[in-house]
Amino acid sequence: NAGVTQTPKFRVLKTGQSMTLLCAQDMNHEYMYWYRQDPGMGLRLIHYSVGEGTTAKGEVPDGYNVSRLKKQNFLLGLESAAPSQTSVYFCASSYSKGIGELFFGEGSRLTVL
Amino acid sequence: AQRVTQPEKLLSVFKGAPVELKCNYSYSGSPELFWYVQYSRQRLQLLLRHISRESIKGFTADLNKGETSFHLKKPFAQEEDSAMYYCAPLNSGYALNFGKGTSLLVTP
Image (tube, rainbow over all chains, first blue to last red; front, side, top):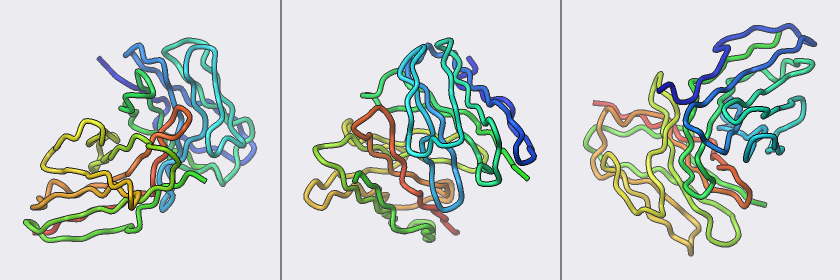
């Protein structure tokens, strides 16, 4: 049982390049989230999804797009990477919002030069 | 605006000393509140939630609605408690809103 798996774990991009982070969960969870973690800023919500085919903006959505075509996968895309997007990205999933227990991936460290 | 504040970036205590990690929130209504912990080289994980009034690894957290606080406490800190701690209210939507975190260092 893998839980929440993020790929890739590390990536270096040049400004303007694009990339996609993949999050996969095998717990049949309805809710999935993408957070970014920056020093001194804690975790900030980028986008989230409450079910297959649905997405919504979080606190810091600009510069990112997401898709949830399959229930088990939540993709985070950067169309034109900027140095300000250098961060550690965490994906999480939960069965429902009321319970509040999020299961996190290991994180993906992205550096934009 | 909904806001969660953890005033201490770093908290250093000696082993065996009591520890209190502060969390204040400004949310309307009665939000559900959680504490998450991230140990070195481990995933972020749930420590405890206020609704279940549980004690995990000796930690407890009391919700004080009057002061809008949800401080995390442990009477006797252990070295293995060294970690990053996040207070997280469940906002009016569908996601947890994490505080900036407090790094707890327990020294022998």
